Amino acid sequence: MTHPGSPETHTRNWKALALVALGIAITSAGHYLTPASLRLWHSLFQRLYYLPVVYAAVAFGWVGGLIAGLIAAGFYVPHIVTTWSHHQEYALEQYAEIFMFLAVGIVTGILSDRERSRRAELQVTARKLEQVNVELQNTSEQVRRADRLSAIGQLAAGLAHEIRNPLASIDGAAEVLAPGGEPEAVRRETLAIIRKECARLFRLLTNLLDFARPREPERRAVQVPQVFDNVIDLVRHSGGKRITFRRDAPPDLPPLLCDEEQLAQVILNLTINAVQAMPQGGEVLLRALRAGDGILIQVQDEGEGISPQNLDRIFDPFFTTKDGGTGLGLSVVHQIVTQHGGTVKVNRNEDHRPGMTFSLFFPQTGKEQS
Image (spheres, rainbow, N blue to C red):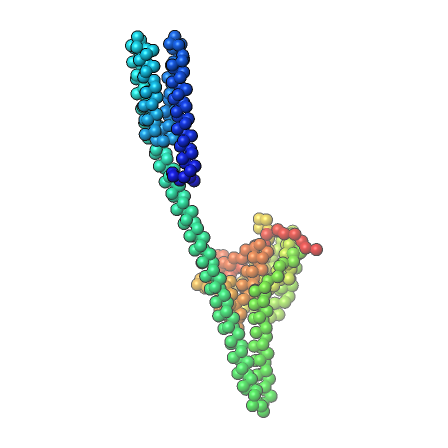
């Protein structure tokens, strides 16, 4: 965009002036050099005056159109006086045409001024929008930076909380063992506490490493029903007799290109959560089906469900409502599915049935790795 006082504007104005002057000069020369007997040519030259007048109006507004019309009239009137004075009726028509020069120049100039004004307003608006866009980008970057700092703070706070509790238990157990001479039963119970809390710390750090440094998926053609069977075999004995497991997958379900170990980890985490959500027993359903250009995997329980205020936080690191939970299981699930280009959703079961359904969508994209 050029400014009114810029060199480009001055150059453009001078070129416009030169074209207007050249147009009036050529048209006037045509009048003066053409014999009066060729009246048709004079009528043509008379209309040609409109071109420089209109151009001047477009380039300089109504003032430019008026001045160009007056200049054209100044060149044309002597020709009317000297050539057509003996044709009074025709001469009057030529004088009337001069007023048309002026009217066309003024009207065209007014319209041009309005258009120029609108264009200037649009340019001002565009500059403001550009400035607002820059400010929004800066604000967005600040918000992202604040979100990262907030996430780091929450991560540190959650990690400190999860580590502090096992350390306190281990410290208390060490104080019990320190004096010595405790009964064998007390020693076994205290050592069991130490082992339990150490296992908890180990599980926490393992989950944290999986969350903080996830490895890239090694995609293979994986039979999802087989993964279901393996997970059910792992969880069946810990679930107790009150928990039943059912898998539902069509026989023609295509293999899923994914990391089999990571897929098993995701389904195992969700299945364990489903079992823990049903202390009174119930059914865990593992379902897989085609969905568009991918495969939808669902883990459904008949448990107590998730409260609405916690539903938006369940994938946050270290958020847990279970005693002894690390709060990283669902975060790892979300991260693995996202790495595969998929999505995770959680909803209450339909038809007012108790429990929740976790839905994992995996697109059939990517290449199998050798």
